[in-house]
Image (tube, rainbow, N blue to C red; front, side):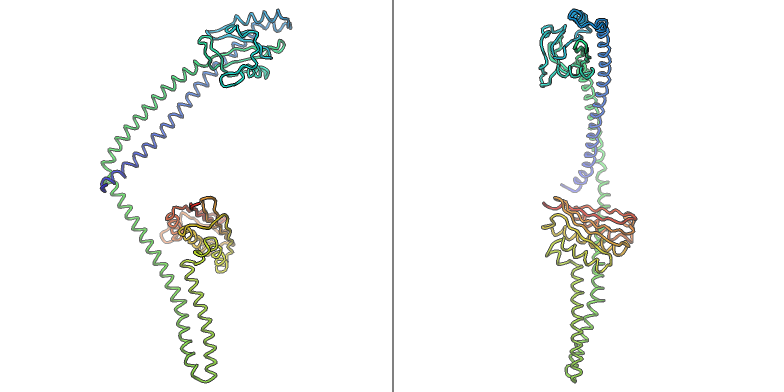
Length: 452
């Protein structure tokens, strides 16, 4: 693929992805709003039906109240009440039913074959006990109950919203209900209309996406060339910073070699030369030569220690030999001895077998963070923690110092080099770095995903 084609693709693809994301968001919002509208309509419709049912049951109860309130419980009185209730109806499928509390059907004008049968164990297609639930609702004082029942006009099972009340002196449950398939049909019509609206909206978004992609494709080359120039400038700036960091490290190493090892070696050389001359002299001079050589040995031990320190700063051997946890423990001990701020190290979880790159980056971040604690924090203690949970490895450096402004320091042109180095190290291995600071202290957390 040619560069121009790549630039056009890089210009168009983000736009298409953005429009696709917008389309998905709009679709999700449309579906959500449609569902909310459907629920609102359904709730309002059912609320009206519930009020209607309560009104019907109140009328039916009033129609037999002169018999029920008389206090009579004989069969003739109850039969008269059943006769009155059987004649009450509304619409094609509206009727009243009566059961005793044991589940026996006492009156059912649309299904007379059920009268006299005990329907306590009747269950719908899902195995839900229908009559038991209605009686339980009546025993609780009455109320609304949804269940499935055969619709007289279609002779098919349909969802029904029932309302029942108890007649305790007669041991009855009286109720009525409204079939909800009409509600479902109305809601299905609303769903169809909403689906058409959503499809129309998606079509307009698709047309807009195509037009916008064509426009962007025309201007994509110029735009991406500009972006490439900016990216190239950033890359050059990053490369310059890398070179500056390398030069700073070389300058530090040069100072350590010149101010420490070089001067010691010159002193050792002069003492050895003086000792060689004294060895050919008097016994007293030879004794002085011996004492000089002993002092030279002490200086050589100092030189060796300085070489080890410089080598450790460049890359500690313990990091390769014993792993990250041991290296951090040693670093905490050195920081405590040299810096005067107690550093407490803790390792949790398995830290063996980690990639060398992750070991090095986390160790350098710990070095930089502890150096900042020593130089700037004014802390009385610091905690260094290495914890692993599954694939997540987290390094935490916390102190109780005076804190600072991480954002302001990071963007300062002459400060914040250490913070930027830490961020770049984590970016290089795909990790994450977070810094939180206040008057109570500072917490630096570096996390990276490692193989299980």
